[in-house]
Length: 260
Image (cartoon, rainbow, N blue to C red; front, side):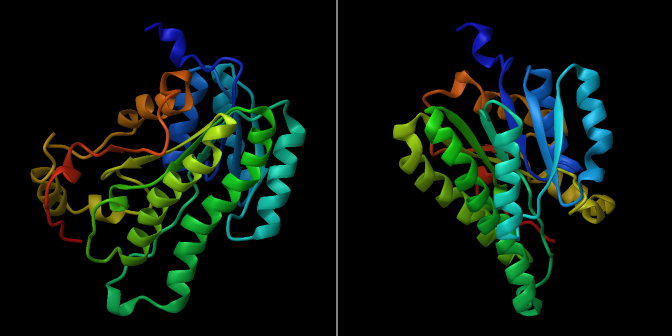
C-alpha cells in the first residue's frame, strides 16, 4: 500500500477542545500529515499559541469559540466553520471533561456536566458537521472515547457512562451516515497523563501499580496516539467504520482492577 493513503494534504480537520492536552496532540499529528486545522475552545484567545505552532508547521489554523454544552454555540461554530473554508473533511470530537468522585458522592450537577459535555455535545457537533459532509458525500468523524468505553473503574461512573455512550453512538452514526461516504470511528486512549488526571501521575506508587497492569509495562505517551489519529482521518481507513480503536498498551485485554 502506498504511503499516499496517509497523506492529508488538501484536507481540513476540525478539532474540538484544542486549547490543551490530547486535542493538541491530535492537531499536531494531523497538521504534520498535511491537514489544515479549525480548532475550538470556549475562549478563542486560548488557542492563539497553538495556532502559531500549527502555522510554523506550514499549515493554516482557524480558531473558533465553542461551548459544547450550549446548543446555540454549537450551531454558531458549525455555521462559522463551514462558511470559513471550502470543505471540512475530518471532525475530531475531542472536547470533554471529568469530575472524579466516588459514586455515592456524585451530584445531579456533576452527572449533567459530564454527560452534557462528553456525550450530548459530541452528538450535536457531529450532527452539525455531518450535514455538510453529507452534501459532499465524504467525511471522517473521529469520536474520542477512552479505555472506560469498554472497562469500568471505581470513581469514574458518569465519565465511564459518557465514554461507553460514545462507543455506542459511534456505531449508530456509522450506520446512519455510511451511505453518504462518511466513516465514523472512536479512538479510545488508555491511561495517558492529561490535565484531568495529572494528580494521579504525581503519585509514584500509583504509577508503579498502573504500569504493572499494562502488558506493555508503561503508561501511554502522546506520540503513541499520532499514528492512530492519522489512520482514522485518512484514506488508509476507508473501509473502517463503526469501530473503537483502543490505544491502551493492552490494559483492556483482561479483567484488571485499577485503584483510583
